[in-house]
Image (cartoon, rainbow, N blue to C red):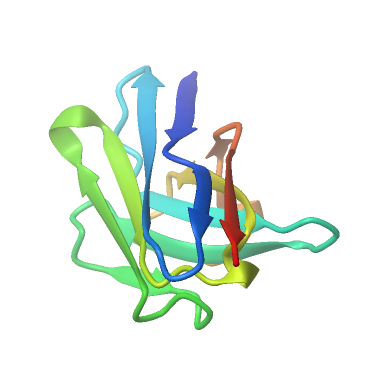
Length: 124
């Protein structure tokens, strides 16, 4: 089994920044693709960002492009999501996910493992 644990969420003012972390543990963790998704109250979940194992390929949702950066520390088995210039509409529970495929995916159904989520609340 693989466990993913997110951290770093909290309450932040609009215009501020947050860095979310996703620590992976369990059996040998060599999932090629890591992704971040989010779900706002009353809305469907949406893709935020994804990265290949090598870090050479990344993808971002239009809503965060230019404001978010996904990165990973392989030695620590940790993936990060830095979001700057936070907006009220960034308020959501953020989930990290892992998939065994090679291709980056924006589809939640293609991810195999999920964390429990971390709440991000942006205030005015």
